[in-house]
Each structure stands twice: as structure tokens, then as C-alpha cells.
Image (cartoon, rainbow, N blue to C red; front, side):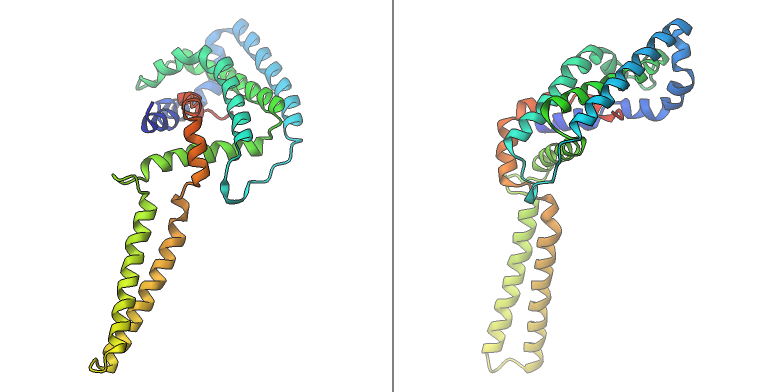
Length: 254
């Protein structure tokens, strides 16, 4: 599976429209759609899931987390993160996959599908909480891992030139080359006694501005850099990372 497809699956899907247009319907009329008996059954299920999730999250959040220096992901933590993702995938996503994909292909969601969202969200929340407790991973670490893993993979996929050089590196190289050329021109003028003093001064000022621009560009493009260690690690676990994107479920607030 290509990264662009994986990123599209993770960040796309029509569930954004489902949530935006149907949130009020879910809260006000969703349970009524099932009828009183179904509503009671669903509510009891949601309450049970929430109570279990809160206990698991207390256990999970007892694990302290400090983001690693340089944003470098350690493999043992990535493995635990993917174990949590796998649990959510196997316990919740697989069960609702057909309905989710069907709704993603529709311009307007079915009310019957919207009515199921509260229970699905409760199941997602509970499955993630169980996974976090089992893996000894706090919600803070999980959120950091999620953002780092998928943003790094997306950046690594889209911020590349045809020769494989990152866009950030290419920009830095171009600007740095211009600064070096300006410096060489200034030095050549300064060494030439026939060049007027004003011209020498202007060339020196231009060289200084070019150097400052290069420094600023290097700082500004750091956000586009993916640590080499992360690139190698994510490539090693690429199949699992993309498998557990789980489509539009990423848009649900669990």
C-alpha cells in the first residue's frame, strides 16, 4: 500500500461530513431511532464501556511520559503503540468496517448509521483504554506517538523531490548556494583594487543578507525534516502502521 493511499485513508473518508452534519442528530434523535427498548440496551452498553474505560485509563495514565529529544521514536514504544492500534482495529474497526465504508461513499449518511455512532465511539474509547493499560502507555504518550508516526510518514511521502531529496533539503541547498555565491562575489570585489568602495560595500551587504536568509531558511524548514532514525523505523513497520490507520474511524472523538 502506497503512503499516499494510506494517508488518504487515514485523513480522508466521508465521515468528516457525517460527524459535522449528524452530531446533533446522534445526540437528539439517534437512540429514538432504535426505539425505547433498543435505546435502553444501547445506553446500558455505553455506560458499561465508559466505566471500564475510566478504570483502564487511570492505570494507563499512571505511566509518566516525556517526549524524546529530537522527536526520535524508540522501537519498543512503537511496538506498544501498534499493539494498541491493533486492539482497536480487531475489536472495533473490523466489526463496523462495512458500515463505515458504505457511509464514506455516500453524500449523506443514513440515520440508522448515525444512531450507531455513540456506541461505536464508546467501543473505540474502551478498546483503546484497555490497550493502553495493557501496554503501559499513557494517553499523552499515545497522542504524541499518533501525531509523530503519521505526520512523519505523510511528510516523508509528500516532501520529496523526484530524486528522493527532501523538499526541505533542496530549499536549504539552493539558498545556501546563493549565499556562498554572494560571499565569493564580495570577497573577489574586496580583493580587487579597481572596484569602487561603494560597490564593495554593496556586495558585502548583499552577502550578509544572503547568509541571514540562508540561516532563517534552515530554521524554518526544520519542521519538514523527518529524523532518519524514524524514517528507517517506520519503513520497517510500514505495513502495520498503514493497516491500522482504520479509515474514517480516525475522525471520531475517541
